[in-house]
Length: 325
View 1 (cartoon, rainbow, N blue to C red):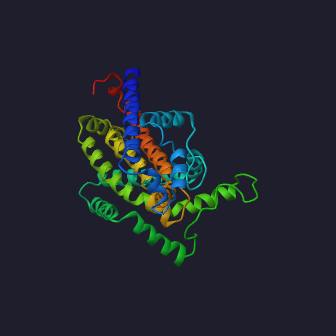
View 2: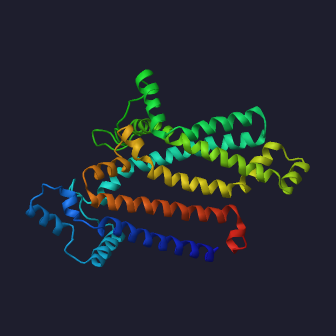
View 3: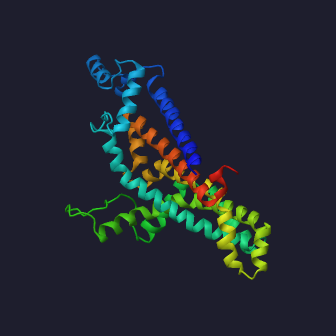
């Protein structure tokens, strides 16, 4: 297990290093004047010189890269040009929305997909199986932003159960901290966006779960468990699902990363102050400092999720601990 984790950690840090080089090269070393791009064609020479010095563009590229990486490791980041605030503070504030949103969407995705996938596999080639696969195919085909608009029209405009957008925060307006009412208000504001994000992901995961469960159900040990008198339900949930989890975990890891990185459009539809809306505003304002750090954060999240999935592999399939598989 130790060797397995060491290899995965080595891959994790190597991938992060290569990704940081790529992000830095794309935003810092491409032809053109970065300061001119950020300020526009009408910027005065004095303003260009000031921004040039603020961004450290007068220093060699290797030194700027090293300063950026060391600052990230220490939690110290450059100031945003648009907000005049360290990007770390901006991102930390927006993560209070994006992380709960992604977690809630992933929870809905997992519960719905595993239930539907196992249900369809247990009734293979029946009308229930065909119905689940048909609905999942429709779910895959529907864009998240379009489904989000439909949810707003139904639940916010027609039924008026929730607001059409915005986020009140997790704490009370008087600064007294989080209460049950404020937590419920924040969760209620994230519910429709989470459903919009979870629909496509649940449809994909349900199909993968069904295929994996069907493959495992053909194994000899499953027939042995049934021959010993174990009920069909117990066989499915105790033996089949666990052994089918390796491909399912792969998709779940990719989906959680997609939920973090794919909230840009949905957060703008619901006017949520999350990371997705932050990077959208930074691109519109030509704030490349924020774009660089947010992109690096999203890359780190994707790589970290893949590392967690690799560790879960070893817990689900003990053969991986010894490298026999």
